[in-house]
Length: 231
Image (cartoon, rainbow, N blue to C red):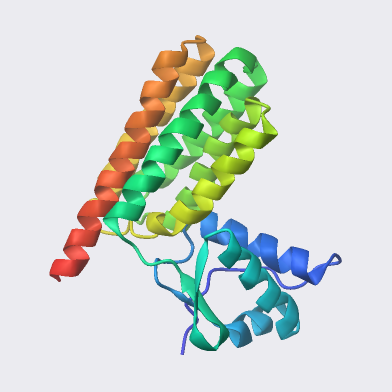
């Protein structure tokens, strides 16, 4: 039976708990797990080539911060999708990420613009390919957004953004229907608008583009959920 897990690196020369937590956190943020997907300690222990203890503790930590939900017999899963949860997270993301991009406008450099433009070009290349590699696209999307938020240089704001992405990330896994490519192409147009807003130091332009990007993705996720429920 083939595994449904994303590609995760096995144990490295650092705390096994730190490594397992970071790998799972990154994968959740980038939509590599689906809403409702179960987390099995045995399976992850094999993947990470470690004992059950660091896996169990990493899962406990992810549950505490709301990325996972616990079930009887010490099992856990990604929180199931609900439209209300999506709406609540979008309100949070629009507020904190909007503030971050406003701050970034004041501090962005030419080197930052070049980095963001390169990410956007790579995403465009993936979107133009015959078969869309959604996993690769979502990884680049996360790097693009967090590169902007890093420019803001506000660690407290970044912590809140990361928490919101941890809870929202699995919903990105739902961008796999027939309309996903169109939605992502529209989002990548918004990415260019964000870059231009940053380059010209037009905070409203950058913030409007971010808002369009987030809301369009949310609408596509809701539509995909309707398709799955109807099917």
